[in-house]
Image (cartoon, rainbow, N blue to C red):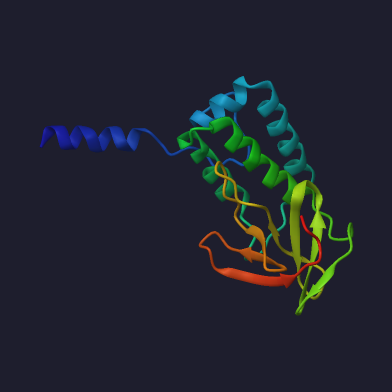
Length: 175
């Protein structure tokens, strides 16, 4: 009984980490933050993302992961054998989202939507008003993007994190 009471007090004494969208090198909480803060390349990528986050708000939408959820999910890279590679790919996904410009590239129709080739091998899925609905990237052994995109049978297929098909769009490009 005393042990349970003491455990309850200790559990209350340690607050959960503050919400983050980039690493906090002054008080790293996660193993991934320790790696980011110690690795010059990851540190530079994290600083680049922080600059972008501070300069403009992240896009929002049903198929766009909010910054805090992305951050928490990216910290799970610590459980991967290729922790560093996983983090690099996670940051690439987020930076691609933050830098995506739907006016760059030639959109191709996909029903009431359109797709556009984005930098870093991503594909943007745009609504009929031209607004970004999702930014898909390929799945890798190290990182699964929030929205994945794959080419199959002359189509580009966008899937959400649960694997549900968001769109199947015809494509002529071979990737």
